[in-house]
Image (cartoon, rainbow, N blue to C red):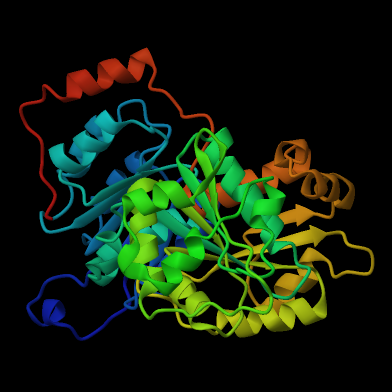
Length: 420
């Protein structure tokens, strides 16, 4: 048995003569999944996390010769008969084990078989993202159901620039356009800057007085109010923004941000908010109430410094992980390299977008994001969409072979039920 699985400790289990159990053991088939798991779950597993490279069959062989861990993460990707393999796994582990499964099948029937049929706590499909693991695996390991229970309704994503000129507003507009136009999810782009906001300009949309009314008189907010206030850009993409006179200062009513987001979440799948870090209560509330924050920085020393300060802000109640880091304009003349930025931040950036001033500038000036969504920029926005909401354009389908597998597995008379 490897040393990292046999560290002695004085526990109740050891005192009773029962073999010491690893708090969390993961069998993962690829390096990418291992990297995501280690980064996200290191804080969720204070008792220690052990990762082995291997699939479900290798896990079965190993678990026959060692104590069952308290929580087990199993990778069934590439397995021709994953349900049969999981059933075989149940024969070699103790019945109180908590099982989390990852695989390569994106299918609701398979999900139900794994969770409801076999009794696994959760199933996630690849490619894994940090947000996906944090939202669905993290609360199960920490016994914190707050995040897990707060997923009903649309998802709120805030985009904040570390410094002015970082391109955060453009990233927010492109992300909303990706969700609403390319992925065809009902999406609204929210711009809380009533004086100098550019969200409507970037998408060639109209502004109105609805947003100001919402923050000054939140009791008026309902679904009909949202329908009338948000301005259409495409069939499933809308903008909620204002353009008030610089001499006027709207009065923010306490709690207005929460009520507005609740109404927007009932109407839209995604709420993308372009929220600069300006010390006003509206912006603070939006950052705190979001499901995921995105920080955008340029490859400069000043931007790195401000990013470090923003990372020190505490997470909101619905945020299971640190903000997603987007390194924008990589390759900027005179700028830092990606390695230098990551070394200064002491963490990896999640998404890197190259410096493309010609395409991005033209698209912003014309209010036509589709002209910029090509090549490396499109790849970057697609990667960001996966990080914050694991949305993909092409949904994978279940082949005939696997369909037969599911229907056959559903007829099994004996299905071990993992402890829930």
